[in-house]
Image 1 (cartoon, rainbow, N blue to C red):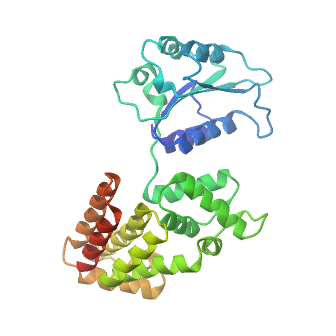
Image 2: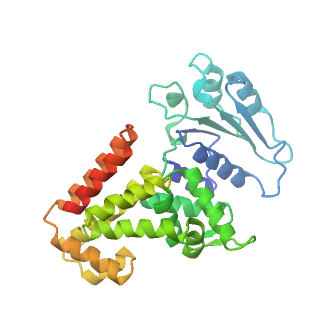
Image 3: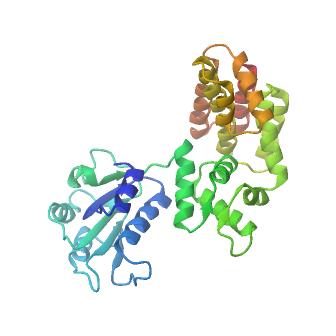
Length: 331
């Protein structure tokens, strides 16, 4: 099961007696615990006796099992969270594997592994497949949807346009994204809970925004010299290279979407509307897409993916992004 599917199941009240959440995104693992906690207990509940958190580095499998067997007090259910469970060996985990086969129906046991587990890990066959949740960071549109959902959980109302702008400006680090939402909310006043584009602009600053939008315009206009200078300015200002890549990837994706739409005979006014950009900016993308040879837009997308792979393998950011900009402007 993927993480989004797990959260939806929890919202519907389908909470398994044992679930294994594994992945490297610590924030999402905590989100899983929060979602289950809210589904099990009233908002004003005292969690002291209702939820217990153990760390496998301090508590062995038998301690986790003993905690899971404790009957709830003042509630029909109890929640036990076992972190770092991946550190237990198969031998050490035998009591836990036996418990999973016959769990206490009044306890929900969440097993958290802060790494992606391979199929050969003893936990994978020990836990029912339907209760194993792969916790993977969202990307693309999923990232925007996740950020808006996370904001709702924190009682913020985050506009879709504002969420998209935050992602474009801040990259894909989940903790940083949630922090930007909070900062943007404060820009609207101490008690403000609504975050729109205006609040995001107030936080990031007009100068930074101008560089970003100038970069996207330069790429669409195929002005490589200006685009390379703007990339340098953004990196010098402390921008995350993957965040700059995300901005460039967004332009490549827009060109690909419009190019495909033109090839399939879609109406240009519909394609322009789908870009959600000012008329002049949308027209520039349409003009560029119409002039591109067949397959060129797809190759630009592949070029962005290749650059992402190289950056994640520790390739130097400045030359990689400069070469990418040159390629984006050349086609």
